[in-house]
Structure formats: structure tokens, C-alpha cells
Image 1 (cartoon, chains in turn green, orange):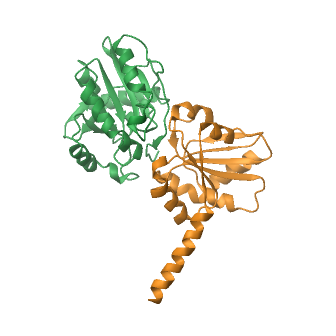
Image 2 (cartoon, chains in turn green, cyan; image 1 turned 135 degrees about the vertical axis):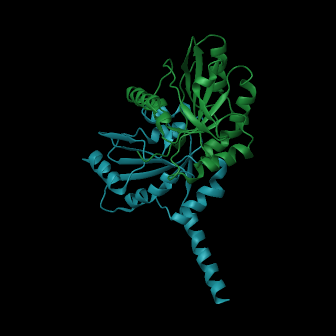
Image 3 (tube, each protein chain N blue to C red; image 1 turned 180 degrees about the vertical axis):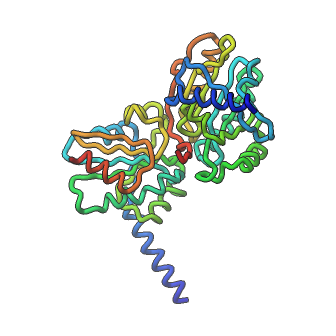
Length: 199
Length: 159
């Protein structure tokens, strides 16, 4: 119990230090969130991986839906290469009733998610990362014993139609990281749904 | 039967309203012209979409602003970020239902990263977002606004 209080206090302190959100080159922040399978998943569970494709996403947003199959394909392609997908749903469930834990479970089962789909129920993690919309990607790269932010932004440059994409920002960024380079661009913007929060 | 006839008439009136609203398709050059004018008009440019619930909630305020006769030299433009393949199915029925008379434009350039920063560097891309500007003042709001907040910002920009 004491340990739990101490951990919470430290997490809070860490959050206070990084309210502005993360930028490429920053250390990633650990999280420990409930997965749709009932387990708890932490970033530290991925310490043996080369990186993590962290995706802030949700059930009802049309942009999240438009990218859902592309996110599933990213995990199919990159998990075996050491860059698995971890999805986090940050939306307040009162403001967005389609994003309850039960509805998340339903969606993950229907679409056969091969990756964790975690609930950021306290909404502290998305704020600490500085995610502002869904979907919002943070590519994490393992450097030494730490995860660092390598790329923040969009998956590619056509939300409506995967076949019309001309810039694969995220895959290019993963390619750069694999080659030991810095992604260029390391940040992109895209239209997306606001993350639903009361505060 | 009489009821049916009435329904048909009401339906026909509805059709006239659709014809009254035209949606102008714009690309990024046209959007940036729209967000960078320098004249005596105050422009209120709202970025929204039919699927965005906070946007739908606040759109009545923008329509009210547009219909406000007391404000001179103000132009309200609703830039829809609905996917171009959903115009007939979603956008037009929505505008018809809401009886929107403010100017509506559809952004057709989906290569978002090339133009979001040019509208405003502080914009992450989340909607709703609203730009209020004239040749002297400019404010960019990446959030949902209330009617009073909207009027307050418009007054600040105009004075």
C-alpha cells in the first residue's frame, strides 16, 4: 500500500514536470493501464523490444475508424520486427459513451486486435504525452535502457483512402529508426477528433 | 391523404432550402487565401465536420453570429472537413436539417500536414477550431466555444 502511494506520488510529480507534452528526443513516460483482456500492460513490459508504436485512438471517431485497418496491418508487419503496436483509448466515457471499457472490448474482439487496447481512465497518460487528437501516433525507440520519442504525428497523408497515400510518415520514421537515423519529418499534423475530457 | 399531401408540400419546401445552400469546394491555396485576407471585414472561420459532436453543438452559435444584423463587416465561413465522399450522404442533409445559411466550404485537400501549420502554427489539427481575424487582430481557438465566448472574441478582434 505504501509502495502504491509512493508510486502515485512519483507519477503525479512526473506528470507535473511534463504538462506541456513530449517532443521527439524526449524520454517516453511509463504507463500501467488496464487492457481489454483484463490484464495490466505497462511500457516496461516492452523492454525487450526495439520500440513501440503507441497509438492514441478510440472507437467512434471517423478518423480512428478510417485508420483502424492500417493500425492492425502495422502491428502485423512491425511486431515481428521489434516494433509492436500498443493502442490507448483516452476518452472520457461520460462524454464519449462509445468508449467505455465494455465497448472497447467489443471492438477489439470484432476486429481481432493483435495488440493491447488500453484504457487511460484517469486521462493522465494522454496528457503527459501531449496527445491532442485521435488517432495520434507516438513512435518510441529503445535507446540503452530507455524508450525515447522518435516520431509524433499521423500515420500517413490520406485519412480517407489508404490507396491514395503518397507519404507514409510513420513507416518512413520506423525505417529511419531501424537504420539508426533520425526520422525526417519527426513531427506531422493531421485533422482528427479532439480527445474528450472534462478538464 | 390530406396529411400525405401536406408532407409532400413540406418536403418540396425542404428541397428549396437545399438549393439555397451551395457548398464551395476549396483546395489549400484557396483556404490560405481565405485565412489571410487584409481588408475591413472581420472573418470568423470555423473548422468543423458533421461527425464531430462538439462541432455540431456549437454550429448554431456560428449561424446565429451570421444572422446577427447588428454586427457589420463580419463574415462567417464554415469550413467542413468531412471526407469529400460523404457530402451527399452526410453534409448536405445535415445543413438542410440545421437550416444553415452561413457560407459553407468543403476542404478537399486531405494532405493535412501541408496546410495546418499555415492556418495557425499552434493548431494540432483537432477540431473544432476557429480563426477570428481582420487586418489588425487575430485569434485562433482550438476548442469548443460557447455563444458568449464567441461574441467576446469577436468583439475583442473588432475593437
